[in-house]
Length: 129
Image 1 (cartoon, rainbow, N blue to C red):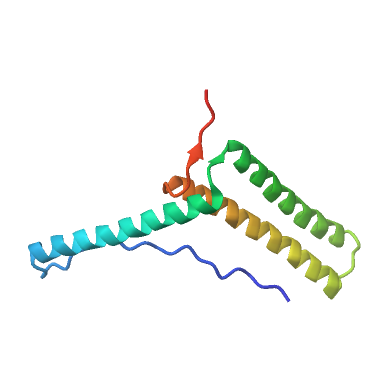
Image 2 (image 1 turned 90 degrees about the horizontal axis):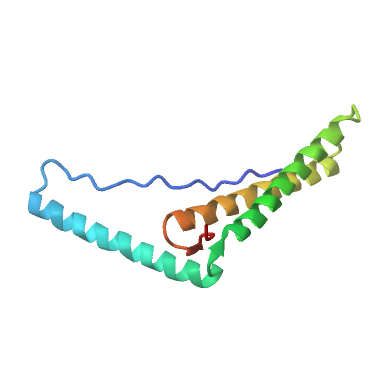
């Protein structure tokens, strides 16, 4: 049995004041929401940087290579299974699903690490030109 990942990146709603809201109350609410957003940012930056330290282009490249290898192994296995002309067995399908899952999880982790750098949660040591 295969299971697709149920993870979905949340869509971030931004503050839109109600037209009937008092302008002073709307500014106060906006300020409170900015404090909440900053608390989340600071927490993410502290926790993630402690867990992962600094990242650099080499870490991204190594992860990208593993993602590419996982993708290649998954697809190569599927191609090999199709060459027999037979419907794959349940064990073969389970192995194929495991390979797909490995690719998807590694790919999501790569994207997640990239987002961490993009959002400023994770320090990135850029190569010196």
